[in-house]
Each structure stands twice: as C-alpha cells, then as structure tokens.
Image (cartoon, rainbow, N blue to C red):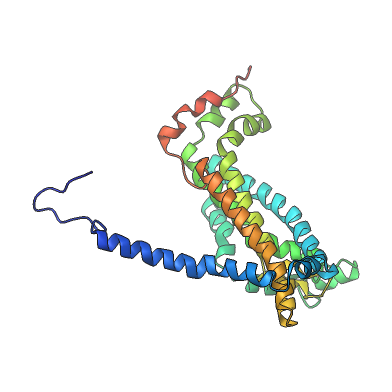
Length: 298
C-alpha cells in the first residue's frame, strides 16, 4: 500500500467514508436506472402466466415485427460494417484532401436527432420530396416499406464500426501494410493477412454495438415506416402499439425480447473488451504485431 509523505494531502477518495458513500451512490443509481427496469419488464411480461407470454410472442403481428427487425439488421449491419471498414481504411491508411471533413461527416449521425433524420428522408424520398415523383413513376416504393426502414437504420448506425476502428488503426500506423505491399502482396491479401487480424476484435465490437442499435432503433424508423400494423412495424414500434392498445402484458412480453438482446449485447461487449476491443492498443502491445506479417514472395 502506498504511503503519503509528511505534509502531503491525501488523494481524493482515500477517505473510507467517501469511498463507501460513492460506491453506495453508484449502486443505488444502477439499481434504479438499470436493474429495476429489467426486473419490471420480466415481472410484467409473465404477469398473466407463461401461456399468455407464449401466446403474445406467437401473435402474427408480433412475429412479423420480430422478422422485420431481424431482416433490417441482416441488411443494415453488413452494409454498415463494410462502410466502416472502408472509411477507416481510407482515413487511416491514405492521405487526401477532405479527410477531416469525411471524419466529421461519419460522426454526423450522432449529432442529429433520429427523428430529424427520418423527416429528412421524407423530404428526399417522399411523394413531395426530391426523388419522390421519379420513384413513383418508376413504381419504386422507399418510404413506408422495408427500404425506408433499412435506410433510416443505416443512417443512425453508420458511425459505430468506423469510430471503433479509426483510433485503433491510427495507433497501429501503416508500417505493416507498407511492408506487405513492398513484398508484393496485393491489396486484398494485405487486408486479410495483415490488417484484419489486427482489428478483428474492435471490428466485432463495433458490429455488436451496431446490431444492438439497429434492433432497438425507434425514432427514425417511426417516421419512415408509417407504423402499419403487421406490415411496417419493427419490434420497438410494435411494443409501443401494444402499450397504446392497453395490452401491457403483451407489450412487456415483446419488450423482453429487446431486453434479452440488451443483456446478450452487454455480455458480448464485456467479452470483446477483454480481448482488447473498444480501446486503443498501446505501442508496446503492437510491438509484436510484425510477427503476424505473412511471408510474401516478391
């Protein structure tokens, strides 16, 4: 245990009373803000018994909402993953004009309200929007259909993968890629053999966060979907609809699915953080990275 020298004031938090008070304050907040809502969801979901819970999940509208949410995630997450990797590669491995502007644009969805994003899609793809008349004449439906839901979900989750990869790839530098290229490796070979092994945990970390946000997105999707029961309602929208129909037990039964997803996401997040994801590696951790550089014949 470290001892303070004579005349030196104690560090903040050394007082046992302060530590216990701070810990109690944090535990109370966690209990009120995180644990209590999860407990309420579980209790209310089974308030009418297991049979009613199963019937609520098996309801055709609920099943369609779950299916639509999963389909949206299966489309939006891979696209945003490819976008995040490409954006991080461009920003960290190349020099070009507008790099700083591109970084700002990638972060833009975090500064814009999801509802505002949804309304902006109305002005672009709606009947009175920029491309609305052309889409209508071509009989292409974007809004109040799956494409609009996917676009809105992609917008709000676009930064998740890129923001996890950019700091890590900046810390790693370009030396390994340049060495592989100088030995004759192609761009794809360099990416899969050198870059990807160094970023895999951060990439998975970003994918997990992106998937969780896509499945739980409400604001932007509520604007572009039209809230059509059994057709364009994702799971979060369906939960609100059930609650407004005074079907609290069914609403909480559907909400338990999202709560379970949140718990799985949290477990995956902690597991990936233990593997080094979600934080920038120190130079000392990268010192042995050259051992994974593939042997490339010129």
